[in-house]
Length: 124
Image (cartoon, rainbow, N blue to C red; front, side, top):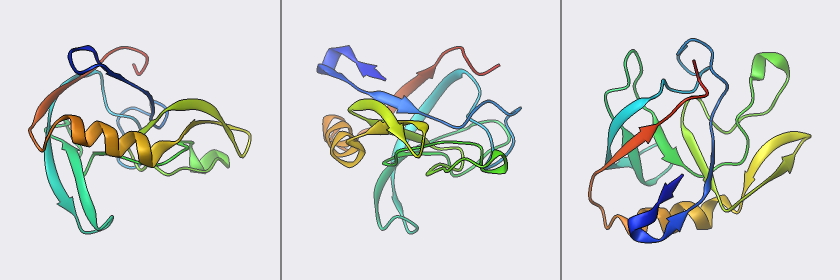
């Protein structure tokens, strides 16, 4: 993920593409509005990815791995986007690392304002 105008870039990880199934798939490629909201589940402010066809509750938040649980992998995502400073491995899975710090920096850049997210290729 990158925001060149603000001098920011990081890595992101999502679940594998599984036909946009709720809690099992990354979201389809497209352009989405992201708005700040308070998550009762996380007890913190996050950015919600709005108007994902057939899906609700998609957020950008911290976490490290996004694997298919039905195939024995661990996941910190139920369809959400996880950010990190570096790529690496955890539990023998692809992962993003230094996630909380990266997410906090990303959120501060937008100063609580909405933004447009463009997701390209790789998922269909």
